[in-house]
Image (cartoon, rainbow, N blue to C red):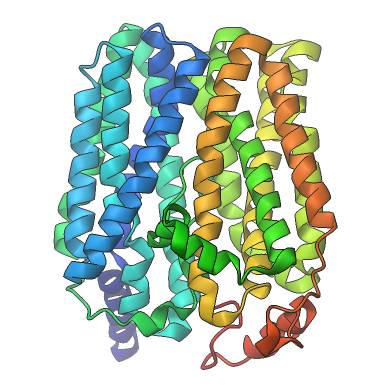
Amino acid sequence: MDKENSIFKLLEEKFSSDRWYYSYSLANLAAGGVSILIPLYVLHLGGEVSDIGLLTAAGNLVGIAASLTWGALSDRWNRRKLFVVIGFLGVGLSFILMSIVETFSLLLLLNSTYILFWMSAASVATILIIEKESRGDWDHKIASFNFSSGLGWTLGLAIGFAWASLSGMVLAEELALRSLFVILGISGLVGGVCAVRWIPGEVKFDRSKFRGRLVEAGDLITERFRYLPIHLYYLLNPTKLLNTADKLGPELSAFLVAVGLTFSGFSIFFIPLPAYFKSVIGVGDGTIYILFIANALSGTLFYRPAAKLTKKVGPRKVLPVSLVLRIVLFPLIVVPFAAIDGSFLQLLATAGIFVAIGTTWAFINVSNLVIVSNLTEGRIKGQIFGIYNSINGASLVIGSLIGGYLAKFSGYLATFLLASLFIALGLSIIRGVNYTAPRCGACRKTNLTTDFVLLQKKTQHSNEESCLD
């Protein structure tokens, strides 16, 4: 009996300590459902694929500025919980207001407002874990947080699918879309209430814990909406950017340029997809949700296997293969509906392509982070990962505009081919990077191979910090 009581006590303690993750899960549920709903609503309002690109780019520009603002305030006030609550309540209210919008300009404004509030919570997500947990538990806690957030995003897509598929039987399309905004907005509001109750009390901010900012970049589990870290000011502050760029070295500089090209290619591909499926192929809203569920869920489930494989064989093997797969898969997305008879087989084949694309994201993300980490001197990793994520954010803005307007004026196949071309250009640079190049003069003997040897050794001792930090 005592043993059973101890088990229940352990489970209760675990739920009590980590249940604040579920407030983020509820917010991700709302954001996941809206990620497809907003492009569909743009089309419903009479907008075009270029408008989707413009809306996405504007929102991400706001996200960059918001990350700077919220992050600076969070550090200055030494508070985290407040920003999460404000963020989630603002997100929920923004979605509910979207349900009464009748013009594209107002939707663009509310979408930017939603991202403004989203960044309030996103900017402090990983910091909460870092401040609350001991360094030895970071990997496990970050993985658990990412997994629950990723599942929340996928559940939001699933709710969008169910509502889009079933509500059409009793509701007009416009009313169905508007009511889904309300449902998802309520989820965001509930997430805010849960954050009030479940997020732990304020923890004193210890800047020494931020030597390893890789854990912060680990938030990038969901490709269509990235958490942008606080250090984006390194992109927008020219002095800090130049001071940091001097320390990059040619190999890391080349790799970051390649990252910008590949991520731009990803955005060029993804932004026009909802419009392609709805306007060109003519599939229903529920089908579009199903496809993105396949993509999001595969990326979530393969995140941990990707980390294990990258640790085993090295990113120099994993990353090129993953990028080549995307180069092939992106234009291949047009084949099922053009070459296969039968709607079920078309959907099945397209879903298979989406699963493969989502899976490659996990391997690309992990490989990128490991390479950047191992080509960077430890004392400036925070700055370098700030630049890395800034490049990702900028590429999303650029790719959104290119993808939206190119699809409008040159067609979708040309857009998907251009996306593959961007990735191919990035891959050609990556192949020329010398992975054994020294990080700096102070650690001239440390290279990628050595890091993986150290990693394998250190993972055998839980009390030693991972060399990925």
